[in-house]
Length: 249
Image (cartoon, rainbow, N blue to C red; front, side, top):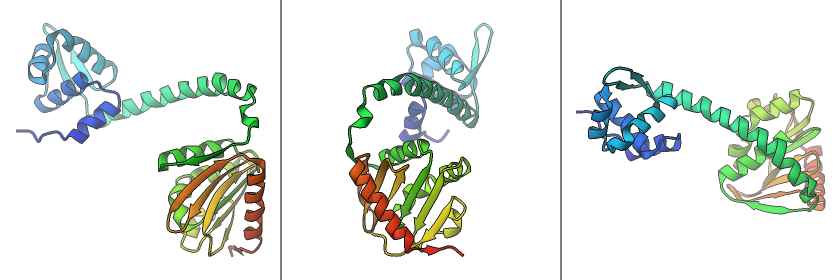
């Protein structure tokens, strides 16, 4: 007998875009091999009225293949191959979303002058913080200041490759880290200095917006702001710390 498939595996299949019926059909094909539509219906618990629609959708999505005949027979593709097809399909979707969002919706937002209203947001959760950080870095054009204490490693470490790309595109990148960082890892992203005793950190982009990490052992408060006064204060404080930090040899 084949090993049972965990609920976590079923959840992943649904997350990559398979319906409940499609998940059942793919898993029964993985378990039993080549099958006809009626066999998939019987053993997968899929209504016969839905099984052809389900199998055709799985074939379009790249999870199964069909051997046409009377009756047609269906067999599963390798999960790794199917996952790669799902990844490429998702990348195409994101590219389309980006084209519409940035080309059509973002100008609407900017025309209404919403960006002119200073704002302060408190960010919660690692995903929202990283999403905001990547958005900020994507908009950097002239100057990037990064103060990264040990507790901000997860956030800053996740975007090190973006820092290198910004440097290569002509952005002036200044990064300040504590000694417990792997300095060699960040040494090539720009002008890097070492400073101990940072109880907070942050990222400042073009002197226009700032993401601030406040805490001691871990970020207990993460704030984003484009408030002119707050961003200026953060930038001035960074310059103060930078001027007395240790240059790399």
